[in-house]
Image (cartoon, rainbow, N blue to C red; front, side, top):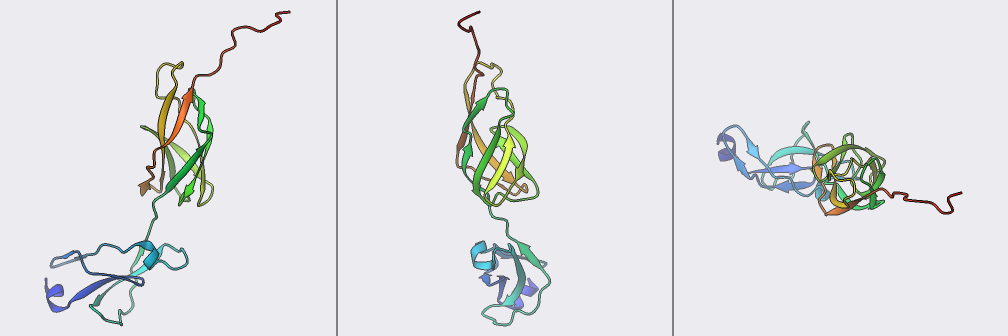
Length: 171
């Protein structure tokens, strides 16, 4: 491209510098460096610029890029509940705070509440089994701001509700 032919350019994300992955007449495509290199003080936002290779002067840029870290799920408590669902579970992990939060129980998706960066809660949906006497185990994942989903195979187990057959003494 005219731009790429004229200058040997770098993509600059805050303090992180990357070579363009591709370019054409109208655009450069850059792959971001890891967020830890770029983001200061956990803000998640970095200034984005294009600069001549090895230049110390990148100039001013009004463009920004927001890094969204993937949520990581460490545990789910309790680890089991009734097949009818509606068990409030607490998920612990990292990067769980966001505007839109969903818990995924295999194929079922339910809203959750982001309590903090490390805690979220949600109510379990009913068991995927049509037989309420079946014990079923499902993988639990979390999606924050529809950006990414954790997948460390944390599980929740649906158990049949206890039934009382008789009580003694009867009178």
